[in-house]
Length: 141
Image (cartoon, rainbow, N blue to C red):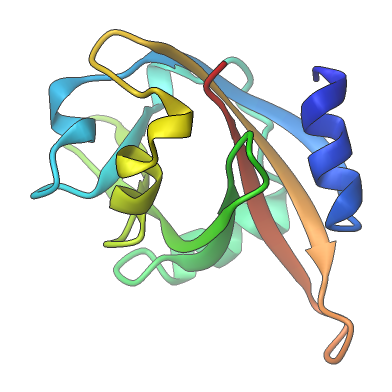
């Protein structure tokens, strides 16, 4: 992970950093009507980016997903939902929510169709409940 993004994770007291995917953005992902970033299973670099516990949690909440934070290179964070959509013979992870359009609309991110982005997963601990929360950082430089 580039140092700039490691610093973002550290500023959030994050740990357990895992690379998820590198992909080119599509027109659908940048559409305000869709409000999602698709993470096709076949494009994910490692099948183990989620722990067994995280997979179980996501499967248990398949219809509703898990609330997560998505951080951008400019240290802005939005709350989105991480879901797993079952297809016929496979599945697709998605980061969805109306707040995703804030990331798309932020001129600093310079998002456009075909732009390569990288996504990293990490965890932060809720200081009150001590529960772990999943977070993502989007590298769009």
